[in-house]
Length: 412
Image 1 (cartoon, one colour):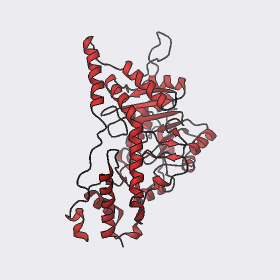
Image 2 (cartoon, helix red, strand yellow):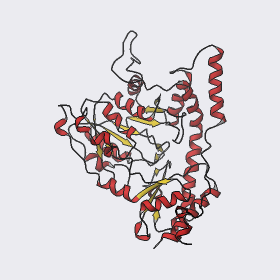
Image 3 (spheres, helix red, strand yellow):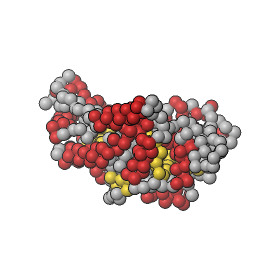
Image 4 (cartoon, helix red, strand yellow):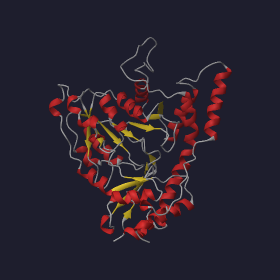
């Protein structure tokens, strides 16, 4: 086998066609039809803050071990509502991870605060306690931690830093449904946990959706107010809206779908975990040019594998990582680098000096750039592959064959 046999050069694909997830179907349809039937029978329209959302929030909170949950209309608005519930001082700083979706960083700005990107821990897509503490100043008001690709951040260590500096912690769990540390779900360590339920996540509420979780009853009321234009939730009758906020409400249709999907979540995570482990135990571990950091996390840390991380070791190959990714994708596996997911290198942030809140007199003199050396090294040495719960042994063997094919042709 030689270069002409690679699919990227016109050769046959190692993976003819991978199936979609098939996690969304008749059960979700039945739940929505039942909802429509109930409302049409009485001449009404499904709204929000109704029985379906109430049931979903109770079930989701119980799933996370007990507490309080509120449904929202997106993961971005989940982060927004969680931060808004803390009533952070304007122009204060929120330490965040530097690799995340823009929707995980922009809500800081929309709360009139300043996002301060912490570098990642070496070899990780997430900051550790040391990297977060390095960004804390007298202006810091909160810590926002995103769990990336289904991997849990070092929450025990981060909480020690937060407690030392008396800072609240918000966990962004958009990519980490059922990621765990010593059996405990992420999203339950910090003061608040935000979740995305958009269509590409482990479980969804349809096209978009989200939820916020907390163990604090007082914070739960603030979340509900923050997600509903500052309404006086839990306040005496006659109280008017308390503060300006957005309409982040989840509606009854999305809540009905989310209830069905939540029941499927454990099996989805189990199948993804087993699929990744199967790949590495049935051939990938023999290839010196790649390794899987998720299989070597600290004891008690469990990924839920939103994406499979692959570390590339160029000394064993005759190609760059980006060329390797292109060749792998041509063979039929969805794979990509993640360089694009650094919000702090995007135009909205790079052009910030003329924008609010950075240009406010209260903050302008503190504005600065931040070194992200560890993050750059990780982005240059690791990529992600999509391994779905619908893949059976046939598909998994084809994936192993695709990697093996690249090894045969491109290894030194």
